[in-house]
Amino acid sequence: MILKPRLEDFKIIGFYLGKIILGLALTMVIPIIIGITFKEINPALDFLISIEIAIFLGALLVKICHTEKDLNWMQGMIVVSLSWLVAMALGAIPLYLSGHWKSFLDACFDSMSGFATTGLSLVQDLDHLSYTHNLWRHLIMFLGGQGIVVIALSFFVRGFSGAFKMYVGEGRDEKIMPNIIHTSRFIWLVSIVYLILGTVALGVTGIFNGMQPVNAFFHGVCIFMAAFDTGGFSPQSQNMLYYHSMIYEVITIVIMVLGALNFKLHYHLWMGNRKEIIRNIETSTFFITIIVIFLIVAKGLAQTASYPAAVMLFRKGFYQLISGHTGTGFQTIYPQQFFTDWNQLAMVGVIIAMALGGAVCSTTGAIKMLRIGIIFKAFKEDLKRIIMPEKAIIVEKFHHIKEVFLEDRQVRSALIITLAYLILYGLGTLVGMFYGYSFLGSLFESTSAAANVGLSCGITNSAMPIPLKVTYIIQMWAGRLEFMSVFTILGFLVAIIKGK
Image 1: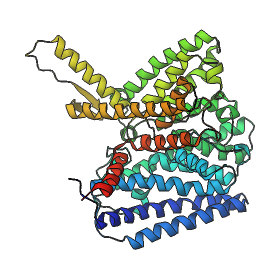
Image 2: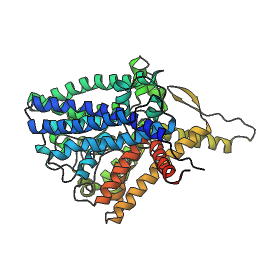
Image 3: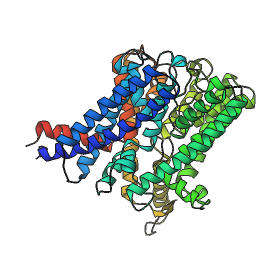
Image 4: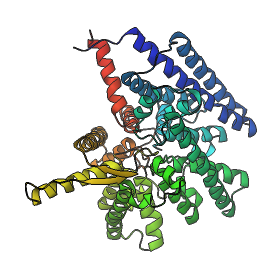
């Protein structure tokens, strides 16, 4: 028998959702300051309107649903899934008010793409978008990469046992430090330190490339936030092509890889445990898959002879591969070039890279390297069982921060999430094909959306069918949260309707 949710469940969910909305509202102060600094009064007013709406909604929920009770697992998961949808809607308000999006749905698409660190965009005339709105596009990627709930846990929510339930609901299941609140703050510490270093490196490079200092550092901070949080937005419509700089591209590769690493691995590297990067199953799997997939991409590009020089193969081929594998979505080619300059083999290589993704507890989406490594270890264990004598005791283990013995529950979990992603990739592909797009193009774009990558072969634009836009929004949402909290809210809705 399915139990109908009680009024107390709704109150607890509403209370903590209101807390998160208030936290999100406060982040809108940053673009307001930027608007005043650059004398962009109308854009600043867009955010002033948005922050008033967010504060009103958040305060209303906190007041009406006030409770002293803690979250249980179901409630925590639902708060997470709802917070991302509400963040999408609130984050879209200033974007829509700018006049650079044709509809509020298009603004919601970009808002979800930003928070989910995907990078697919429907913006119009990006090159003339205000500094204020442009910063917001990249700031929501920075916020989404760390996690909307992580923001609340870091600054706006005091310690409580339900914190871990919300933390897990955002697709993270590893505590870096004993306390979840401290874990959240460490994630922010890492991100801000890298933000300063990355912005300086990109800003100085921009100045040497002829950009004005203010513009160079503005682009530097935006590109860093998009690269480290594996998002893919860019201040200019040409994306990375705008900079025409190999040094700029190399710097972003380093930042993208850093963003694709587990925050727990960052902690151990900061503590001086350098060997962990070699021993860890995630990083070893990551670099092996990069090598294997690059061989596929290079073979495909060799067949087309589009990039005969090694430097061009690196800048056009390897760059797209790293961008896809880390889930970033930066492009050094125009979207249409995937069809004009690449062949199907090379495109399939990038699709595989996008589908696999980076590390767990990082800013990336997709299946993730830990799950791929666990599945490989399980396959290896089963082969041993077949080959070895029946009485032999087979024990398989892997190194992930520490030595871990492989268990059936780990394999089952990895296989279930992997299967869920493959189904999500497939469903998006079917919708794309339903509207007349090719199989490979539909698979490419669907994988990019569901894996939170942002590479595009040209399908994503403001003229595409509304159901396809909604499909990609759902894919970005479900892919970023890794399904658990999404399944929970679906079950909650069923309980409301059929519960007794």
